Amino acid sequence: MTNTIIAKFGGTSVADADAMNRSADIVLSNPDVRVVVLSASAGVTNLLVALAEGCEQEKRHDLIDQIRRIQYAILGSLRESVVLREEIDRLLENITMLSEAAALATSAALTDELVSHGELISTLLFVELVRQRGVEAEWFDVRKVMRTNDRFGRAEPDTRALHEMAQLHLAPRLRETLIVTQGFIGSEDKGRTTTLGRGGSDYTAALLGEALGAARVDIWTDVPGIYTTDPRIVPAARRIDEIGFSEAAEMATFGAKILHPATLLPAVRSDIPVFVGSSKDPAAGGTLVCNKTNQPPLFRALALRRNQTLLTLHSLNMLHARGFLAEVFGILARHSISVDLITTSEVSVALTLDTTGSCTSGNSLLTTALLTELSSLCRVEVEENLALVALIGNDLSRACGVGKEVFGVMEPFNIRMICYGASSHNLCFLVPGENAEHVIQALHKNLFE
Ligand code: ADP
Ligand code: ASP
Ligand code: MG
Image 1 (cartoon, rainbow, N blue to C red):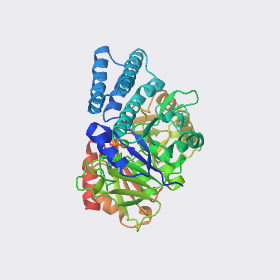
Image 2: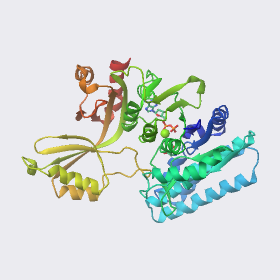
Image 3: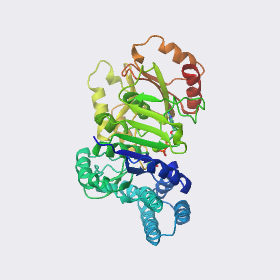
Image 4: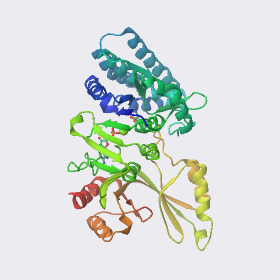
């Protein structure tokens, strides 16, 4: 274990020159921060994803122009650097070329190559900004160490290779200079660029923290910590000053966008505390996620995951039969889909698909091929536009009165499905998408205010 701190800054923290300067203030105020992990400037990844979907020339020009404006505004705030301008122009040229290719034929590999440019550009700009403030810094291409499999759009890291390569290429540099590198992106065996799924920069920071034996990972975002629910939905939500790994991991898994769902895996494995704070207001403090917390409460937080799809599979063959579920799971496994919530009855099973760490391209998991295969086994009913509400807490499944507290408030709403008991940390249910925010607001008022 070293004193090294990995500091990650999200899109809004590198959105423009002011935001980048505030983020640089945070980095430069703490000599233990040796690695900076950055997202793309806010909005850029969405623009790149739109380009990767393939579009007409006029739309393409408009999207590239928007990216250029965002990045040139930051460039323009720096003292003129010919080298940097040429680098940025070269990357914008690449974006043009790759988006022309995407207009002819899209692919997951091409999408990843294209969207990686957001992080490549933001890190180049940030390095120059730090240097112009008189501090030695080095731009580091994270793809040199972040080895992943080739599941483009949702790649999984090879932690052993990452550890080896980070120790070889990165660790020795930390003593000499501040490293600025990209979140979200990696590379597979053949050297092609991959991505870890939307919001993946948090995960990158934690993975690098683990590979380098860091003392802490700091996630700087646009809110001063993890709240009892998304403060955009409930302005009265309260900050949680300290929270255990498992509770925070449940929150992330069930949709609290503040952390990418996989972020806490490396942190838990290596017992590295994770701090979450606001780069707009670092003095406001934040949340510390660690392995010990004082008296964890029964009700901790509410999380919301939108755009959930419910599959109900009916088959009379299920009646007193064996092996039906095994066949269903076999099909889902062949399509690389993991099941999220599940309930069963005598002749039917209802399940939602796990969209955790959703794919960079934003493509639905529910493909025609999957539906065709399932339909050959049973009658399939698909319901879309549902929302998953998760109440996160401690010892929930052993406490009395939880049902009354929660479902009493739910009287005006339809509850499409409930999952309770498998984990003592959560109670989950599906509601119609249009009710999601009202449900969260009503529950928060009753359980947390
Ligand atoms: P970044 O670009 O810095 O990664 P994100 O937009 O991914 O930032 O995550 C920050 C956002 O997460 C906040 O603006 C907030 O709306 C949302 N959020 C969702 N759930 C929570 C929560 N429980 N506590 C705090 N923020 C939350
Ligand atoms: N830029 C990527 C995204 O917008 C990754 C990240 O911000 O964490 O999803
Ligand atoms: Mg994020």
